[in-house]
Length: 505
Image (cartoon, rainbow, N blue to C red):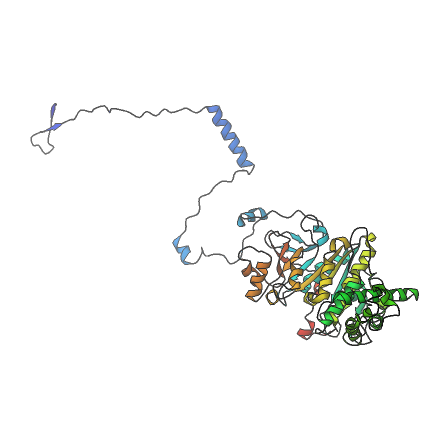
């Protein structure tokens, strides 16, 4: 090691300093630099400049520095008013976007609140692709706008299409106008068929030949005939099913009464059938053989008494005479309005007249099926036709909807109030399209979600649905959140609040 001396700046003796020898490291990192090709750099710069000039690349700017004195004066607070944007920019706000429906056939009902696309619930347009059953059920609490939906989507808009007919059984009374659909009937120029007990209303004959016994059709569609309908009415009145002997007596009496009326070129009437059951014609019992000829004359006692009681009591003036000419002429109009708002809720009158209308309509449609008419039957008070033997006939006719081109639209309120085996539940379950409106009671919302196998969380959604909003369900598909949309004319024709608000009728 070599020692060097360095002079002291203060004039002192020089101090020896030591210099350490540098040693080469055992390894050395070498970085090889690649010289870029000038031509490639020029091409890249040209491409970048062209992209910027075309607006394909936005210049990224650094965010401005936030100043404390501006912060104290509230410069950086959130703005109350919104900022303008575009639909393309707004797509980023809803990451879980849905595919918009491409369906354009059929009548528009409302707006899908998730995808903002139109919702089509026309049963005839959806048949074969979305649904296999064209019957419709509307379920929800009172005051949730169920009637507005039925009157617009299932009534007024249907009348705008050719070859469509709407038949309404109107139970809700609207002031002194009669039923709620009276205003619509006046607007479209259709006469209202009003039923009331007594002798001042119109009649629909329970034995009208249009409801023929034993109708045979090549396509296998056979709606309920006279015997099934009259038997159901008698069973409702007696409160028990007919036994075999009573069914035999009823069938024979119907045959005798119909043959007699045909020979006299007139309609048979219900009181005539009651008299034939109570006092059979001479030799009418021969059809049962010599041994039972006399015994069979007593088989029709109880059915005859039940029919006589109906003709003189609850059904007087409704089904005990020939069908009114107004009723026959009504079926030729696109809108048929059966006003039953004057009938009492208690007793068999309302239920029987509804079922008779349904059966009569089904047979009329069966006889004119060659015209390929598409008919909607609206029953807002569905629970009136759900129970009893007449309700059974009503439901059996609903099962023939495809062959008849008949779509039945029925409305219900509180599901939890109905027994598990209630026929009303069967009507709800058999519907191909279901509109689920808001329910205020948690038990109703839970039962609705359970009946239609809705996804978790649907109970809360049903209870929070605003007026005019509902869940639409096609068969087994997931429900759609829909807002019902109406025009100004439809709002005026579907307003039912004038009485409760005190407005002039």
